[in-house]
Length: 132
Image (cartoon, rainbow, N blue to C red; front, top):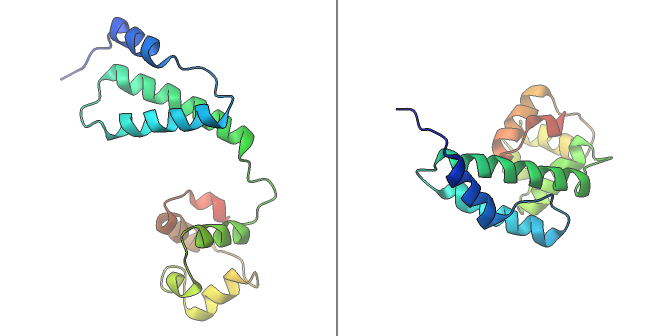
């Protein structure tokens, strides 16, 4: 079954939500809430999918400009994610290696391999590229 795209329905959604370039944190939060609602919708219409895609692009643009990870290292990103999730080194044992390997990585004495980056990406639900 192919769903058709109704320009009138999409136009109504655009009128209702009035998306524009995100300029403030408040607008960003508002769009994130709408994105969450749309993503939770079990039977999204093609028009809702198009609105969702547009809002994601607008939020990504804002966040790329305002939340840059410039200067971050794979180790600092790992430490930040651990702190944000209230994790200890012990929580990563088995995910990226033994107690000694985890300790060396967390303390910056050892780099993160591609396999470990992939495992960390899956564990934290982020792109493995953050750790490479």
